[in-house]
Length: 117
Length: 261
Ligand SMILES: Nc1nc2c(ncn2[C@@H]2O[C@H](COP(=O)(O)OP(=O)(O)OP(=O)(O)O)[C@@H](O)[C@H]2O)c(=O)[nH]1
Ligand SMILES: [Mg+2]
Ligand SMILES: [Zn+2]
Image (cartoon, rainbow over all chains, first blue to last red; front, side):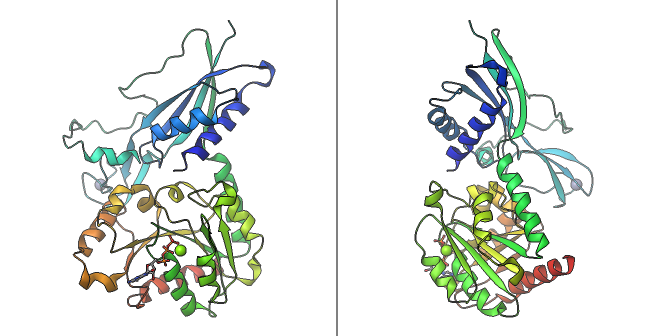
């Protein structure tokens, strides 16, 4: 539902990341890392991005979304595991005292610029 | 909300004990290589960086004034406004309160809350593009019209929605999520981020239980499955039955914050 706002932030950050001495360049691809816990629907984000990118250096750019698994560490027994479903107890000792190591990401990793032909 | 899909995958194929993390591996999905004729420029930033920074500024502002800030979230109609009305009536004037309430449109909730005598700032997000959540910059603007030295507790009633508000930090000290017994027992499993990020949960409208086929134990189990140690307050904000423990929790938070300031 807030994918439009997120798409606009991506465009803003990506545009600001284009080296200033480059003049008019087109961004061909934006590489994102999105954790499986993030409240983002990939298809909806792609759809919004396509619309929001019109008339910006990102028009027509591809969004590469790398899904990051939810990983956790148990504070009681130190087990590290990947959370596959909606259950956040330690898979070994059942403790609820866990630390989420990954899966909350909503990061823009890099942009790819097409060299002028 | 990608985690939802995982429920369908009944076959667990990760039985190999291969559990140590590989922060740099890209898994076995497509490895993206940069095509020739392209240059990759590293960015590495959180997409919500701007909101996060604004939220940190808000938090510093609230800390300077010793104000405890609670972000209240739920689906539309779970009882945020009713819970607030009843809670304010009990804790005021002992605790000096103010409220920021977000809605896509109308001032109905603000009118209801103003009866308490607390300063109420209504935010209609249609001014900000009809957002489904309150963002940190909106809270910053709303807080400017509140005398922070005159209050100890600021409650933010977020827009009714279990998805988006979970992702947007507003500079709060704690988050409360309300679930009502007219919603499915498995809601926490469908909105894991919200229940994971919240500090307490309220199970509201318990006065309706005699008329429903609702399994309270199952609802609490789903909450605990997502957030094992989270306090869950079962209550009815209509009859006010069971509100005591929630109000005690709230008062304790305000007191602790005042002592820190
Ligand atoms: N029976 C019963 N009804 C309740 C209770 N709490 C709230 N309601 C009713 O539920 C409806 C919605 O309550 P609100 O307090 O407006 O809910 P809200 O979460 O603020 O709604 P939005 O701001 O629109 O998202 C109203 O008709 C309330 O009277 C309760 O504990 N028991
Ligand atoms: Mg309301
Ligand atoms: Zn463990």
